[in-house]
Image (cartoon, rainbow, N blue to C red; front, side, top):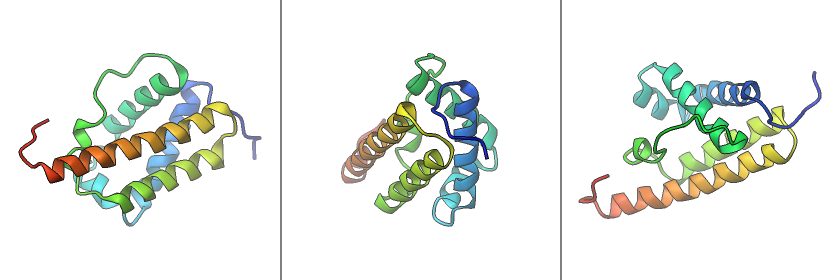
Length: 130
């Protein structure tokens, strides 16, 4: 096996995203949420995730969008976010080692916290419209 290195290129981002979502698609808790939302059309989602993480980690501004709205009304709770985050972190740990790898895990944790707070707010205030 090749020695681990940091996340430094778009190919690294693609490896991370593809490996992670292959694991998501096999996860008993997460797969049904993604399958219902994506309807078997994973490629557009993967391409969006490439540009998102390329922008976030590599400072190459290819993502144009708002990450939260597509997640706002998903049937997810704390256990989904915990599973997502654990799977994401484990994928990074299996593939990479370095500052950007650590940053990716940190950023994913912050996004999970923010998304959970926003989803809880929407559930508690059903009249809110995005």
